[in-house]
Image 1 (cartoon, rainbow, N blue to C red):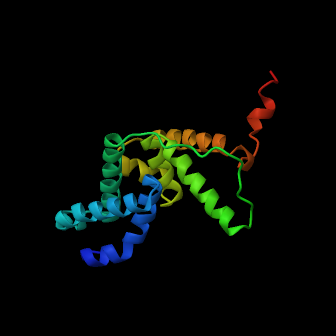
Image 2 (cartoon, one colour):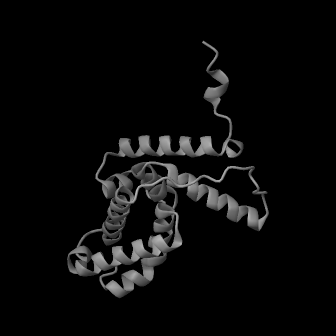
Length: 171
């Protein structure tokens, strides 16, 4: 466990930035979010470092700040309509796909987006996410399932057909 704040920042700031980038969808906003998160964590570092999981506590600060920003600056993001230009194996296409994924994540409600980010970008379990967000593990699973479904609906060509789709008419 890192008890030194400088060591914590050196070890965890890249991970925090990746999570912030997905939460905000914008590099500048992500940098600001990480900066504000670390500023708040620094002010309370003695109390945070004494906890069992200081990283989870700092992640919680970041998620709460992102939620506050989302509520404060809620606005619609224009969607880029057009054909999917991303070809597999094409580096520029991969950048386009990543950009489309971040845009799709931005369309999810904040809690749903947070759950998806914590699961797939921070590789946390249902229990860890539930503890970070102060909700039950079943809420995490529900939000995750709904979020993934919404993302799949935005990228139908990339989704595997669901077995339910084939059996819905059979009863």
